[in-house]
Structures are given as C-alpha cells and as structure tokens.
Amino acid sequence: MELLTTNNIWMMICTALVFFMHLGFSLLEIGLTRQKNTINILFKNVFIICIGLLLYYIGGFNLMYPSFEDGDFGFIKFAGFGITPPENGMTPAYANGGYTWWTDFLFQGMFAATAATIVSGAVAERIKLGAFMIFTLVYIGFVYPIVGSWQWGKGFLYTLKIGEAEGFYDFAGSTLVHSVGGWAALVAIILLGARIGKFTAEKKPQAIPGHNIPLATTGALILWFGWFGFNGGSVLSANPAVTSLVLVTTCLAAASGGIGAFIFSTILYKNYDITMFLNGILGGLVGITAGADLMSTNEALIIGMFAGIITVLGVSLIDRLKLDDPVGAISVHLICGIWGTLAVGVFGSKAGFDQFMIQTAGVLIIGGFCLFFAFTIISILKKTIGIRVSEKEEIDGLDTHEHGMDAYPDFRINQH
Image (cartoon, rainbow, N blue to C red; front, side, top):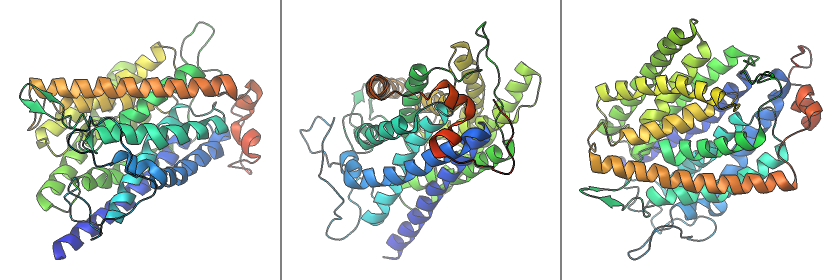
C-alpha cells in the first residue's frame, strides 16, 4: 500500500504540473502577439481548460480508454458517459501504475486540453471566438480521444505489426497530443489566411513583433517546468529509475533544442533571436516526448539538437508557403512532433527499420485522420457562421470588439 500511495502522490503532482502548463501557453501566446488581442487569447485558453475537462468527463475518457477486447478492430469504441471507477478504485491493467482511477482521469484530462491550446496560438489575432469554441468542442470532444485510443487505449496502432516490430510507440504524445493539435492548426491557418500586414504586396513576409517578450519567455520556461509532469507523469508510476531517466532526457533535449535553434538562427539571420531560442527549447521538448523513456542521454541531446534546427527551418517554411503562424506552433508541435515520433525508430531501445515503418505508418494514419476532420469542421464553420473577424475588428483588436475591454487600459500603444 505504501508503494501505491507513493505512485498516486507523484501522479497528482504531475497532474498539477501539466495544469500549470496552460499558464505557460497563455503567457507565451500573449507575449508573441499584439497587446490589442491579449484578452481574446487569455479567454480562449481559459475556455479550453474548462471545456476540455468537462468534455473529457462526459465522454472523452471512455472514448479514449474504452477497453478494447479480443476481436475488436480497435478503431473506435465507447464505454459510456461519465466516469465510473472499478470496485477497488485503482487503475486497470493498461496503466499498471498503482494509482487511483480518479487521479488517472484528471491527469489524462489535462492532456486533452493541450491539443486545442496548440491551435489557439496558430490562429491568434484573426479568428472569431465563437467559431474557435465550436471547433474546440468537436475536436477535443471526439477527434483527440479517438486518436488517443488507437495507441494509449490499446487500439489498432498499439497492436500494429510490421516485420519483427509490434506497436506504434508514443510515450507521452509527440504525435497523439502535439501533432494532433498541429495538424488542426495547419488546416486552420490555411483556411483563415494571414493577418493583415503579415505579407507585403509582393508577398514577402514581414515580422509582426509580439508586445511582451518577457511574458513570452516566462511562458516558455513555465512550459519547460510543466514538462516534468507531462513526461514524468507518463511513466504512470513513481518508478525511480524510469522517472529519473525521463526527466533527464527531457531536460537535455530541451537544452540542446534551445542551443541548436539559437546557433542555427544566428548563422542564418545574423542576430540573436530570443523567440527562436524559446521555440527551439519547446521543439526539443516536443521532439523527446515520444521516446523519452527509451533514449540514452546522448541520443536525447541529438534528438533535441535536430528539433531546434527543425524549428527554425519550419518557421522559414511556413513563411515561404505564405502562411501565418504568429507563435510558431506548427513548427514546434507538428513538425517536431513528427520528428520525435520517427526518432523512436532511429534511436533508443526500439530502434530498427521495422519500428521506423510502424512509426511512419502511425504518423500518416493519424495525420490523415486529423487533416480530414479538421478540414471538415472548419470548412463547415467557414461556410455557415464564418471563421474570420472583419477587417475593422482585426485592425482595432479583438479585445475591444469581442470583449469590450482592454488588457492594459492605462497603457495603450497604437499597434495597427
């Protein structure tokens, strides 16, 4: 019983750390965007936490962990509304962590909200709040838990076999959380279009500076701190050897991702860009998340370093494609999420060609599913209620038009 208590305490701490990450996302997003949209971004992030937990309670948890049985294809199954703990109150065999059903629900629920938060940053400053909220309801209520069930719920990707390898592997969600949000973010910015002033008449990208880089830095460091719970809790127990390894590989990948992005962006652009540095750290964190428990310390450094470089290249690619991602969410969460997932087949204890093919298949299947549903949902919203605010609303700022207030009423700067 003492072991069970230790495991449960650790998982509750990790739950709190993942919850704290939502503050990090909020500060990062408002810092990298203009002050006239601050309240709008904060509103979206608060809404995501509240509605994400409620949706996960109503049906998401049982959609994600439906107890697939022998003979099930493992694509979709629903175990019922609400949450009912087993007779002894402990988690079933899939967790094997010796902590309570209630703690498990809350920990997993914090992950559910993260996917929508990723979308929030990419569509900042020009999406209608109502349209975003409806999208969040559908995507987090259905798409996220269905995809999660394919691996974490022991669905068809969990049992997928290619050659000698078996099972798509994603330890803490490089694909199942970050890429799920990243695919939706990509579709959303394509259908939304760029912010006014992002591209010149000649279609050349122009920087739209964020209004508070200290807040963005604070947010990024809070996210790094929260990742101790995001990855550390994904061990699903307080096992000292595995947990300690995961925390070390996570931190090393973050550090090398930051340094990789800083050096690479400095070589490319001849300046010390703090925003690239911050996103490189986050890219390293996303990259290691799929295999944090499988990697050696040296492999974690390599994965993080490449993730940092990929982050810089990804930001440049988005600009070249004439797309507008104000916070670099697609580079960090989608591109680095894919990299980290494929890296499981290249580095670590599961490395091998067959495993790499399984990882690739998982990325393609999940990517296709998310692209289809994100495009369908957002296209319907675009044709019905509309997804983009008017030109006047965008120029004046969403805080004034959608919320009737100003985040800094005594200190307003014209940022048109």
